[in-house]
Length: 314
Ligand SMILES: Cc1cc2nc3c(=O)[nH]c(=O)nc-3n(C[C@H](O)[C@H](O)[C@H](O)COP(=O)(O)O)c2cc1C
Image 1 (cartoon, rainbow, N blue to C red):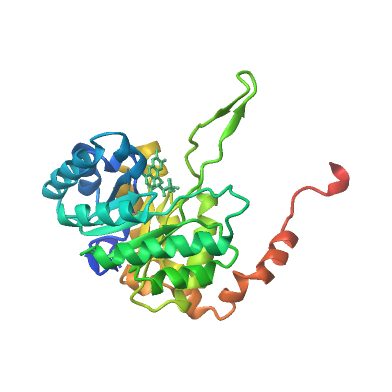
Image 2: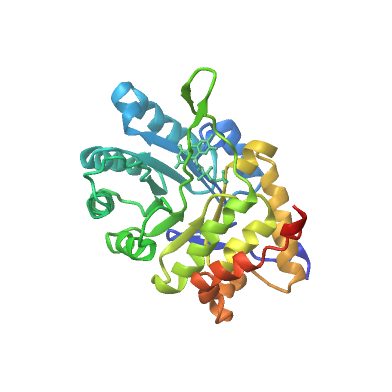
């Protein structure tokens, strides 16, 4: 089959995307010039950088964000997804209404939070997040996706609760940046490292586990560690509707989208798939053991799979 004949169309948050490859929130999605390049290179949608409530409180950031959103919306013909990261329920719902009115096609909630308070339980934190999701979904006039953290003791249950609260999709996962220590300055050092493909394993596992357990119209997007067409194919095979990239595009430039698309098309054509949707969820659907492989059995098998040098030769 010719690679050009492969159909990449996907449904994400009720939107029809020409390609599952989406530029996730990051510096390249924040200005018209680089967004236009991403769109020319083939992205199916773009997620704008997050509007952070802390920044809004510090200045006129909200007006600038909305003006930028409108500019980008007018400049490109793919869906534009706004991203919010608020701290108060009132803040979340106010900005959700504003970005919906400014023409965003969908909304992504970045619920990034590091909870260090020993008196705040997991149940309290999850209840607060669910309250925000329910309120935003109530006031937003566009579909809402929630970008989750992987750090939940009962991930599947929480994911299902987020969906019950009204989310149309889940973005798995938010990538946490761990600060380092600068020993010379004896200070905390915040240095952002770009991801590698190894990090894709976490979203792969959870998309594979969640896909069969969530209602099918719920969209799932993979983020963290997508660097190639093969990575994208893996994410789609476990059930992702959209496959997001930031690090790869920052490292190689916006035009890299067309290379990743070409790699994805070649994979699909070489394996006789007529479309990306034919590949979608084929791992969790076809391989009966796949669910198990992603659960505990996989832990033992992975430990046993180590085949480095004989330990006695070390
Ligand atoms: C420089 C930079 C800025 C980012 N800004 C945001 C942001 O504003 N909001 C957000 O939800 N994620 C943000 N992200 C996270 C990305 O959207 C993405 O989820 C993460 O980098 C993992 O994907 P990757 O492995 O393709 O980089 C940012 C990432 C980078 C590297």
